[in-house]
Image (cartoon, rainbow over all chains, first blue to last red; front, side, top):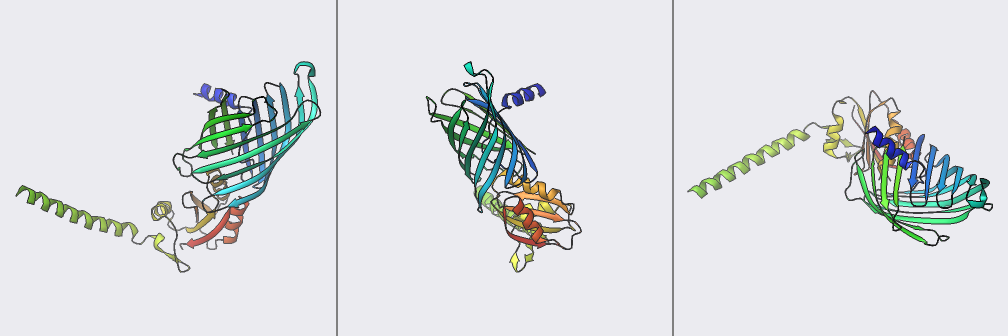
Length: 212
Length: 135
């Protein structure tokens, strides 16, 4: 059991994050995402419900570069309704990019990135959108965006096992194949969230979030 | 003859069940705190959930907090974490379905509604109503 758990954690280490870039006050969050393009890890601390600060690490497998950055997440606006909540966040990062791809030979450059995250959810439905502009000096500049919709097959109470069926569409204008569609299943209970999917390009994805 | 007997038995058992059910209903609600009026309004809670919450904390003062935007487990977890740090709070119940948070205060004569609202707001959610019952 411990071996399986260890393998699972190792597999999901180094992943990117989706919604909720800010936690509750004094809350820590560990997030990781692993898909066909990259592995990334984000660990952040939220001094308040309005912002968080943390480390962001990414490894882009095909282009063979890494990003190590300090990331700031700000809740710009929240709409609380009786049966729904919507949020608008700004995410920004500053760090360095390292690549040993072909002639780059262990080159290091500063990198900055920024983007918005918007989400809306009820206990039954979920929708989100996020984008990111990234700029380094020469190695890599890109823009990516993605959107998700989801539905909960059943409504679970507080502390119970929650399940969501989701569909994610990623758009990368700089890539040869610009769109990737991934159906996912998300499960969470207590502080832990796990999700997995299989993309239209034939890649598995594993995402893991732990809040404490 | 046989049909008449069965019909009579069915009628009798229905009547007995109905009477028993009425007595059960009276018993389950009689003297329970969820029937209280607060500021001229009925206490706005799920009766069964409230009764379950009250087990073992009869002498506590209860704050029934209505929260807007509490639609996911993660949001609710922040509220639970915040109030669990308050030593005056002896028990917490979060009901995502109704958007209610029940807080039991042991030995608290003066529940500070403004403090509750502030803590909820600090978690990024809005309080729409607080009803204080008990003691």
